Image 1 (tube, helix red, strand yellow):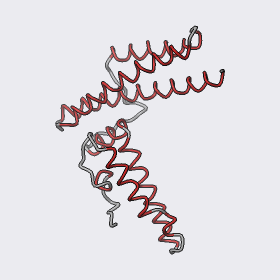
Image 2 (image 1 turned 90 degrees about the horizontal axis):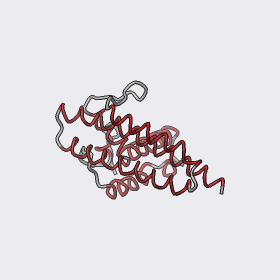
Image 3 (image 1 turned 90 degrees about the vertical axis):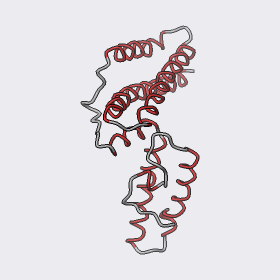
Image 4 (image 1 turned 60 degrees about the horizontal axis):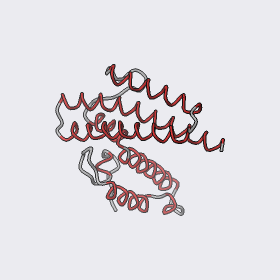
Length: 182
């Protein structure tokens, strides 16, 4: 299997450059690439062959991790279109969204004091997932027709999805803490 590793992530996986991807095809191609470049296959090779195998395996892993997750895939698509997002300074300016975020964070902080913290966390997690799904749907539409306007909308959606992803991670962490208390 011959792969040009100087290509972008989509080309490595022989997929069209799109926000919409076939996750099953991605996973299948990932397994094929891993079999072809895995360092174990080059265990008896030269130092250079083993080093290249390690580098290619890392590149395949990075490409796979990027393409399989909507947030990372959207950020990568923006990057391919010349738009970089700086996590530290590039935040949403949608005040309504920011207020919703603050309210959800307050609810998350109060969960431990609830009579049924697991139920409250489940309910909040459902709300977070619903908001995330709406943003991912917006990204589908925004990346379906690349234009400067849609790319700016996608940039804003990525900013919002970053907030939601962080909130999901915090909810998952709280879920683990609650499980330890049981």
